[in-house]
Image (tube, rainbow, N blue to C red):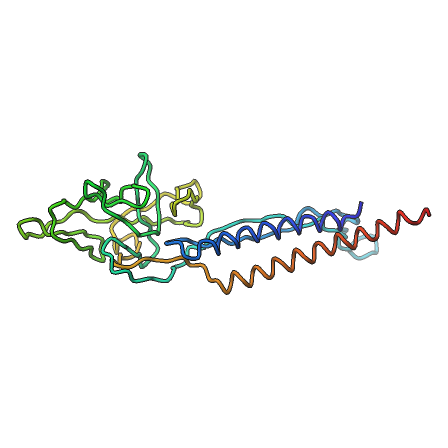
Length: 264
């Protein structure tokens, strides 16, 4: 069989995978704190027909002659750039101006997220949509008493409330985590990320502190960093790549048909 046919098949599969990534990005264009994914490809092993030779015995050197056998998936990575900020005026909506991530705890495990849409549960603890507790600097949950008249969040993450007697009290300070390689984090669903061996150990500290994790903006949310115009352009590229690879297979099939017809 012709090598071009197998190369075309690999190109079709890669184009399908790219469309899968693009489709997921577009589906999450309105997802709070979502970070878009990018896919890269690399060539597969090549078949060497003539090996390279160095100069010698009165002849100059020659380069190797190789025929590629198609392409394969290289890497699917997440782009952790800042998404645009949307004002909500909800005091429990937090946006991070910087590289940090919120720390939430569920099932005795810490997860990390840029989605800052939080709520109060029946005990007054600040939780996310899945009921995971927002963590404070030094560990522990942040709880606002039920009889609190009001509360506010400062850029440094300090949560203060006015008690029943009208006195200001501190409920805790929101912790932010920073990773040396945020692209190494693993998506676990629910806009959450989990630490991996390649993400590095989280540097957890206070917003605006020495770890440079950024500041917290209350009453706003960070939206997805997906650019629809870019995704549509990549979609067209993937579609044309798929069409070109199908043409390679069709042309190879026509050549094979001609070879079969030689006996007639």
